[in-house]
Amino acid sequence: MTSQDSSDPADGRRESGHGRDGEGDLWSLPPVEAIEIERVRYRTPRRRVLRGRTEAVAESVEIVVRTAGPVPVRALSPALFIGGVQVAENVQDDATTYRFFADEELPAGEPIVLGWVGQPPPEEHVRAASYRYQPPGDAVTR
Image (cartoon, one colour):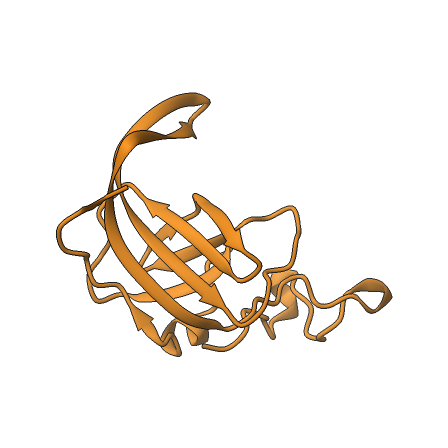
């Protein structure tokens, strides 16, 4: 998978590889090196906030993404795009590993693309995606 940099300046993204003062391009994302998908049943329900309300989640599909480098820190969070579905809820496990939580059905066989919340990836990144979503089997308990 290639970086998530866009070559279309009309969408507000930079064409260059650098931001202000020599910083890296904040639209760019590191390549995905590996993806693991599993259904997890939680011994203690996981908490999440949805529409301003806290709720307990007993089971989720976890999609663990390992990247070639860290995701730039910025106001937007990374997200996965699977078909037309955005999976935004995530935690960072370490410098290059991100755990995404999907509490809805995801479309089987669709490309998995790393992008930014609210910014669907360019079509060429979807076509070039190396990973496709396959629903996990039985839940593991954690």
